[in-house]
Length: 291
Image 1 (tube, rainbow, N blue to C red):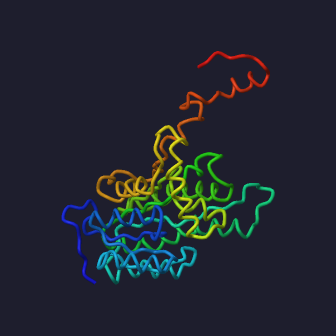
Image 2: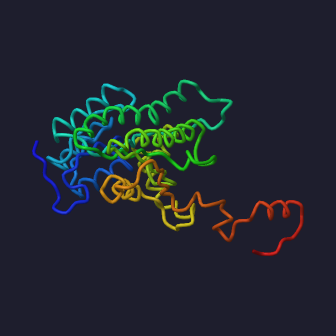
Image 3: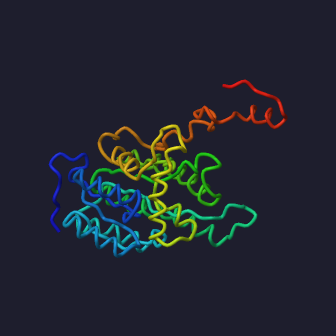
């Protein structure tokens, strides 16, 4: 398959693998990487959407059916990058899922393991199999999708949040080992981004989950200091920065892209929200001066 590139792209002549590429953050990233000159292996389990991606981007995108928890399927996606596009420069470990297990006392152990397999085993396997191809090219860039849920409590259920926290540390460990060999490894911590993951975590169908993503896009502007909803394209831009020469001196970091949701409690940025101290006094019937 011939490789066609954009004339002035930031990842011109680069080859990328994007897991979870058929929707949400993965799709937005694939579209941006292609627009900036890369060829992409789209790794996903949504075969119909994968076929449409190949039709949209002939000679630039190849679809690989890939369950990221299965090592042989990860290896096959990496091998496809080699056979179709002659190598690998960029790996975006993005495939993910959330879950509805809110109470630790009620956690189902098998579902816990499934979440960890997708969110942590998957990026580990992707990294493992990407290394030889990247070394053949003299280096590369690996980006992992973590989450603000991995930074502090309150942004996700226990299994999801714990796995994302572990992924941040795996990113550091990988960067420490691989950066001397020319492979930079970083993570991105999205905040509230309008994707189907919220609906999927509730067991909704993909179609309904996609509709729910549109609702998040319309109503998410009030959840953080920046008064606009987070979109998959916001994360794609961060991936492009870390994958391109613009991020050549950056490794081992987790870049938070969250509209400021983690800057502090709501009362630190919302003048209508009460401080905990004011709430306590009001509950006790003590009047407080306006802030």
